[in-house]
Amino acid sequence: MRQGSGRRAATALLTVAVSIGLTGCSFPTFSDFSLALDVPSVSEGLDSLATGGTAQLSSPTIRQERYLTVGIDTNANTAPLYMEDSSGKVFGIDVDLASALADELGLKVRFVSVDDVDSATASTVDIVMGVPSEDLSGSTVVGSYAESASAFFYKGSTGVVSSSDLNGKTVGVQSGSVSEQKLNKTTLGMSRQTFEDLNDAFEALESGSIDYVLCDAYAGAYVASSYDDIGFAGSLNDPSSYGIAIAASNTALKQSVQQALENVEDNGVYDAIRTRWVGSLPTLTSSQQISDIPTADADSSSTDSDLSDASEDISTETSEVDNAKDGSTAGSNAVIL
Image (tube, rainbow, N blue to C red; front, side):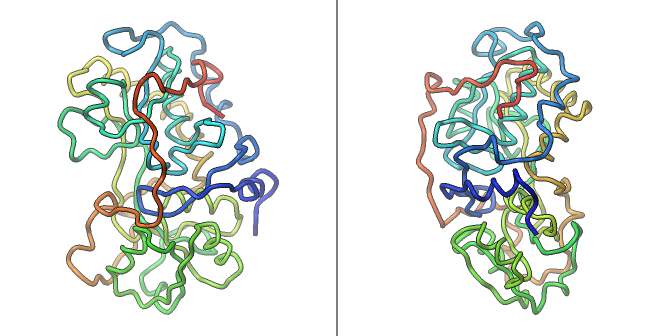
């Protein structure tokens, strides 16, 4: 059953399907996010933060005085980590968290589109959001605030089902997605129904025409929070984590961001951000992985980042600093809504 007002509006306002880069689900952006969520505002969780404080960092530790310049891979549009509406307004977990970190540091925040993490931290930005720890040479990843995995969702309470619960059931997947590719590498005895749009898959789940949806865990949790009877049922693969990349040589910034991240985790702001975008989805670890899933070959353990989304490409944006989108000022408005 659908939840009330704001969550219903979230689906009613769907306009453009974007590609989920982590595990390949297609997900929409909204034309008006002010109506998209009826959970408490994240800004309420920022009351414990110092507002209008003195900047704790300056050049050359940061690239622009009074600003934390944040890199985001806008090519991916990895909802709900990062999204952009038709007016160019940006929002999502990455935006909220980066804004809260800037607040902790007494800074304003600006966002820059980046393609390569190492080159960005070396030349154009202070930090890059949503970065796995592997395959970096000139950057260090601080903390872990998000995870990536293909996950099952079903009509039921959040928990982890068994592989035997899946056999004989019907699963909905987005055609051409990474999650579908991962499903192909198992020998689960499930019937399959493909969808062009993730929302259609969840509507089919709600109507009872399918038993499960398999997609990116965060995207699925974002859609599932529009319903009061759909829950997380476990991940197909072992989750990988994502953190914040900083130039390895910038020790002062690394220490400051690490402390700021710990602060927003301790004061409840991070939990408010996470709840706002993925509801009751638990932090994904190996304990949320469904055990004993039969695999078809030895390569089934490859990470989501090893596979490309075959369903849709998103138009790119320049990574020049001059095209950065200024966020809100630090303080009570640190989270962009």
